[in-house]
Image (cartoon, rainbow, N blue to C red):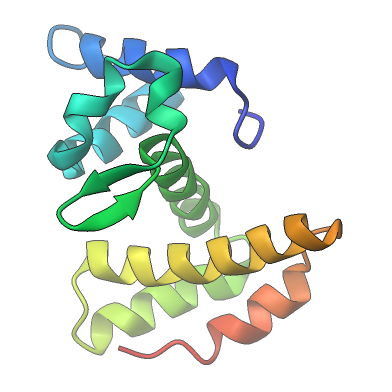
Amino acid sequence: MRLFDPSDQWRFSRIAEKRKTEKLEGEDSRIAEIMDAHPELDPFWVMGEGSASPQEVNGQIVNPFVHVTLHLIVQNQIDREYPPDVKKTFLRLVEQGETEHEALHRIIGLYADLYFRAVRRGQSFDESEYTLALGFLTA
């Protein structure tokens, strides 16, 4: 999956529908699991491309497509233990009392801040800055 590929907006909509009736595999299964953890986003998947627009959810502005994509990216980093400090940080946050989902969201927030800052500046994502910043995350 390419990061924030517009074709994935429709793919996510199809996954959202299929997850109710079919057993999904591979990355589609992982995306469905993330969607299951965020039922508050369900109304937006039928919107197709609209799921990539900011929406008000529980008093916050959320882009459902970006949110699930970031979940997938960070979860894959944890599973692959690359960068290695991502999994270490995740485990440390859980040991400090965060739920696994809260810990994941803390890392997602950091990743998103660094990623979108780099995009706004026309720069590449700085993995060393990410690794350094992970060391400062605490519950």
